[in-house]
Structure formats: structure tokens, C-alpha cells
Length: 305
Image 1: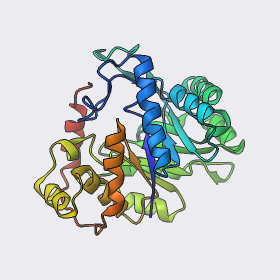
Image 2: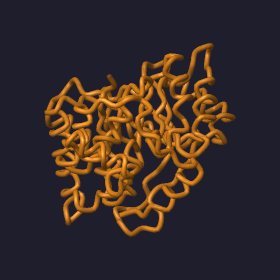
Image 3: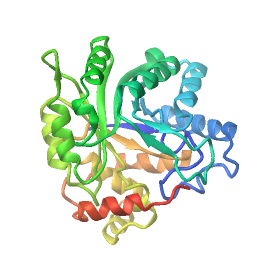
Image 4: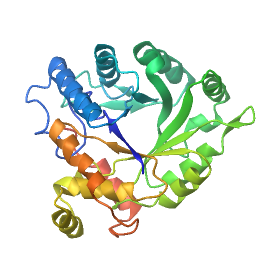
């Protein structure tokens, strides 16, 4: 069965697009309060047996909070991944017009890798391109590809995350990249949930080809927890769990899923998410797919809060 990982997108900054997050976090979302909330969820995850944590340069101060937690607790068995490519630009203002800006360039990679390495050092085992698309300039940037290859050869595993209705094209194009006769990327992190399963066959191919497959947004940025379809509600009642656990159990049921991300914003949300372990579903038990283009348009319209 796949591992669970804790994603820090909702815990490293005062605003994010996950529905159901607003009442899970401290009323005062200053840096100290968010640090304490992040550390509390990390403690609960570790106590529950979760040993994988995923961050990103654009998740506000998530890497900083994680580094402080690792140093303070002394844990040596936590597997850390992070991402580069987006930059956090909201200056801790929840109502900022723009929260993050993407740039897949050699300059952005060089700077952000130095920042990540300074914070997480030897704890980091996987570094991913954040939100790669099939039209990214990365694919034609020989200087950037050479730098990524050099980092890979130093012992850091590389991966990428994907977003958008053309995820399948991105996954195949990125996993075909080679440097010095070896595949450049060893892991892929894609959005898959029962509302947007279109990338599933390609993730099955990626898994069979030897890539590690992470699944993000298994609850559709909270949509499946806050306003679940009737079938999700029925299964939740049947299994005596929340709709969030059903949504994540559907991810766990996919034979190609290696790591399932929880984006919990509180200890209670984490414990509710982890109850997905109690539910066994068939891989195709929830047929709730939306049109991928409509799904991603809905996601793009979600408010930051």
C-alpha cells in the first residue's frame, strides 16, 4: 500500500486555496502562530507513523518551519521532498493580489536550490520542479537541464509536479528526458482525485516504468470534504469516516500510487485524513469524473483565504 505524506502547502503561509482550511488554523496567522500550527501537525503526523513530508519554496516559510522542527526534534527517519520554480511574493499578506509567481529558469533554479539546501541540507532526498507543464521553457533550456543533471549526479533525486488538464502530456514528456544516458527525473507528483482522474493511465505507465508516483490534491483542494457528491457521503456514512477519508481511500486504491499526500491544516484534519487507512475501495468504485478542462477552471477560481 502507498505511503502517506504530509504536504505543507496550507501550513507555511497565511493564505491558500484549500477549502475548509479557514477554521482549522489559528485566528491570528502571524509567523509564530503558523509555525506552532505547522509543528503541531508535524508532531501528530510523526506520532501516527507518517515519515514523509513535502514542502516547496513557494509555501511561504514551510521549509523554514520544517527545518526548525527537524532540528528541534532530532528525527533522522523523515524523508523530505521540496520543490522549486514558484516564488512566494505575498509578503505574508492574506489578501495579496498575487501569492506566487512561477519561473522555470536556470537563475530561479540556482537561487532556490541554494535556499533549500541551506535550510534542509542532508534531510532533503527529493527535489521537484514545481508545476511543470508540457510547454515549460525547461524542456529547451540546455543550461538548466545540465544544472539539473549535475544535481542528480551529486546524489539528489529529482522529480516534478504537474497541474492542468494536460498533465498526461507533461508526465510523458518529462519522464522521457535523459541526461548522460540516464532518465533525469525519478518521481512525479500529479493531481488525481475522483473528480479529475484523467492522468491515471499515464501515472500507471510512469509507475510501471520505475518512477515514484506521488498523488496530490486527492480531496480536490477541499471540494470533496466541504461539499462532497452524494456517493462520497454515502460511503462515508457506510464506513463511519469523513468524506475526506473516502476521497483519500480512493487514491490509496490506485495500484500505481506510491505516496498519497495529505494537505491537513490541523491535527484534527490530519487524523480524519489518516482514517483512509480503514477503508478499502475498488480502484474504480467512485465514477465521478468531471470534464478536465471544467475541473481546472473551477480550481483556478477558488479563492485564496
